[in-house]
Length: 75
Picture 1 (cartoon, rainbow, N blue to C red):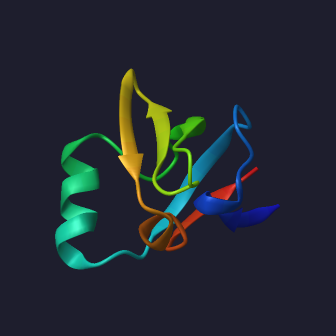
Picture 2: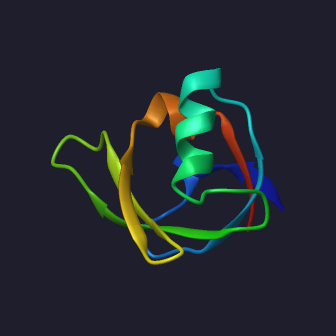
Protein backbone atom coordinates (compact mmCIF):
# COMPACT_ATOMS: atom_id res chain seq x y z
CA UNK A 1 0.00 0.00 0.00
CA UNK A 2 1.40 3.40 -0.99
CA UNK A 3 1.01 6.49 1.18
CA UNK A 4 3.04 9.53 2.22
CA UNK A 5 5.60 9.67 5.00
CA UNK A 6 3.60 12.11 7.14
CA UNK A 7 0.78 9.54 7.48
CA UNK A 8 2.92 6.89 9.22
CA UNK A 9 2.12 6.28 12.88
CA UNK A 10 4.93 6.26 15.42
CA UNK A 11 7.12 3.14 15.11
CA UNK A 12 5.29 2.03 11.92
CA UNK A 13 7.87 1.11 9.29
CA UNK A 14 7.76 2.09 5.64
CA UNK A 15 9.99 1.90 2.58
CA UNK A 16 10.74 5.06 0.59
CA UNK A 17 9.58 4.80 -3.03
CA UNK A 18 9.89 8.38 -4.33
CA UNK A 19 10.97 11.79 -3.03
CA UNK A 20 9.11 14.72 -4.62
CA UNK A 21 10.41 17.54 -2.41
CA UNK A 22 12.02 20.80 -3.45
CA UNK A 23 15.36 20.24 -5.22
CA UNK A 24 17.45 21.52 -2.28
CA UNK A 25 15.62 19.39 0.26
CA UNK A 26 15.76 16.32 -1.97
CA UNK A 27 19.52 16.76 -2.38
CA UNK A 28 19.96 17.12 1.39
CA UNK A 29 17.92 13.98 2.07
CA UNK A 30 19.98 12.06 -0.51
CA UNK A 31 23.18 13.29 1.18
CA UNK A 32 21.89 11.98 4.52
CA UNK A 33 21.20 8.57 2.96
CA UNK A 34 17.45 8.78 2.45
CA UNK A 35 17.17 7.09 -0.95
CA UNK A 36 14.60 4.95 -2.70
CA UNK A 37 14.08 1.53 -1.01
CA UNK A 38 15.33 2.84 2.35
CA UNK A 39 13.46 1.63 5.44
CA UNK A 40 12.22 4.54 7.56
CA UNK A 41 10.01 4.98 10.59
CA UNK A 42 8.89 7.84 12.85
CA UNK A 43 10.22 7.58 16.39
CA UNK A 44 9.24 10.88 18.03
CA UNK A 45 6.72 13.65 17.45
CA UNK A 46 7.18 17.20 18.73
CA UNK A 47 4.52 18.50 21.14
CA UNK A 48 2.57 20.17 18.31
CA UNK A 49 3.13 17.30 15.85
CA UNK A 50 5.45 19.14 13.48
CA UNK A 51 8.26 18.25 12.83
CA UNK A 52 8.55 14.50 13.40
CA UNK A 53 11.83 12.66 14.02
CA UNK A 54 12.45 9.73 11.67
CA UNK A 55 15.06 6.99 11.88
CA UNK A 56 16.72 5.43 8.84
CA UNK A 57 20.14 3.85 8.22
CA UNK A 58 21.25 4.69 11.76
CA UNK A 59 20.36 8.38 11.35
CA UNK A 60 17.68 10.32 13.17
CA UNK A 61 16.45 13.52 11.52
CA UNK A 62 13.43 15.77 11.92
CA UNK A 63 11.35 16.32 8.80
CA UNK A 64 8.57 18.90 8.58
CA UNK A 65 5.11 17.63 7.67
CA UNK A 66 5.09 19.75 4.48
CA UNK A 67 8.20 17.93 3.26
CA UNK A 68 7.12 14.51 4.58
CA UNK A 69 3.89 14.83 2.58
CA UNK A 70 6.03 14.84 -0.59
CA UNK A 71 7.80 11.56 0.22
CA UNK A 72 5.97 8.52 -1.12
CA UNK A 73 6.38 5.32 0.88
CA UNK A 74 5.17 1.74 0.83
CA UNK A 75 3.85 0.21 4.03
